[in-house]
Length: 402
Image 1 (tube, helix red, strand yellow):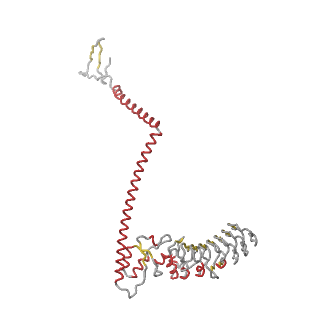
Image 2: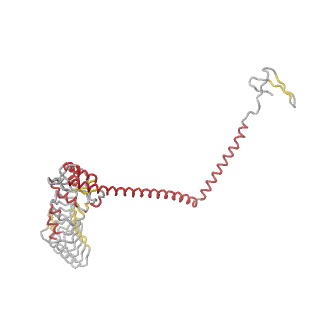
Image 3: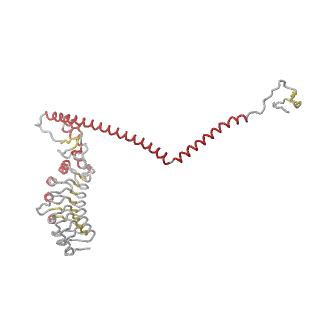
């Protein structure tokens, strides 16, 4: 389908879901959906739309979800959507949008998610987000952003999810505003936000680069508690270089999740600072250290108890498993046990018979006559028995011829 007729959806007042994706639509006629008063879902993705008419979505007073991804849109003006008073989700990813603006002052309080992934956006203006008062999810991944100004990030007060990965972030002094906002952001971001330039920061996360290369000041960073004591006593220059190497939080870390960690803000010490400030900081740190030590001891004892319980349960489980296997084998396989016993009895009998036959075999192998050693070396002997006389001649081989 290449075009929509002006009265194509006339009279469809109960229509709730409409899919028009994967066609060849180039424009949407004015008031094409005027009669679709109950429409809640409209899918126009994977078409060839290049622009949006000002009143193209007039009449969609109940529309909650609008899909315009994978088209050829180059400019988006939020002034085209004032009649979508119930819209919550707007999908504009993978277009060619390079200009996002709002030429009319109005409040779009219902929109909660705006997806602009995969476009060509280079700059963002605060006027756009002044309209979106309750925006919770903003996805700007895979664009061409290099930096953000303070006025724009100040408008992101209602966000709980942000997507800023795969942009052309320039990790110089220009990135300080974004790094400061990320360090205070309590929500989450989907993917890592990496530096694109200069070369020595490529591939580094923005917060890591800011702290590692000391690009900005007054950027909060999580530090180990024992290092806080060092900060109170060491000079400011060494403290900044030390904390620059600390690892910064990713999108899954929240301020309440650090446990024994502390948020420390590195600032420049003025000449009016008194000598009592380090001592106060050290005292506070020592109190926090004692509390943290108690917490660690409690955690260690809890872990030890858990390990003992788990080991005992494992031993009991192994014992009961062995008993169960033996019980099942005795109940389910009695013929097998009988055969085993029968075979063992037969083997024992054979061994006993073999042991009894062994002495008889030894007797059978003995010499059937005794050696006779004559007293004389030469001459014949006469042996008289009951049947007559016989002569026995001594031979050199000690044989007796009868």
